[in-house]
Image 1 (cartoon, rainbow, N blue to C red):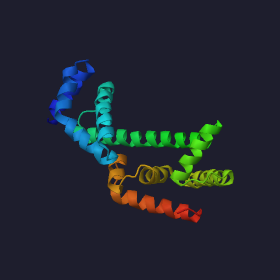
Image 2: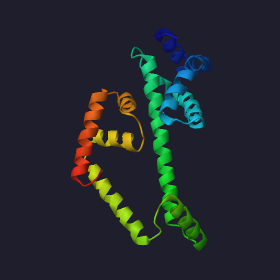
Image 3: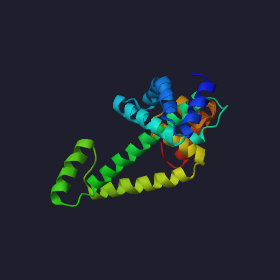
Length: 194
């Protein structure tokens, strides 16, 4: 599908014609899946995000600007959705862990203790408090970073993305990404963090 065909398909989508979406889907489902899978490294999650991608493409068709290269537009959108998926699920895992740590009933507390021991966490309340305080100071240390540095560190550490993937998703050169990451890590080391 060339640029002109893609633009016509999007124009049909904006008018509510689903044949435009079908045409884009048939031409790009494999392309989008490969991009998403590259970030997520999980078949089921990649399939889910790929399906969601085409729903979002339909919903946001009017935001497409012709002449900018549709393959790049699709790639950035797919990568961003995959990164958002990782962020959302990391938050859900952290929330579940915090609920396990603060379990209310005695039975829940016992189950959480078993989970913590198996996961390598201490059940000692002092150790938990120390870990929470440590995380608060990490947050303060992260606040010393510029927004772009914080985003790169987040994508690298939490998102487990490569510098190449980060450069593509942020639309900046890979050299800039590595330089900003190294700069951010120096600042964090000065705050006492590795």
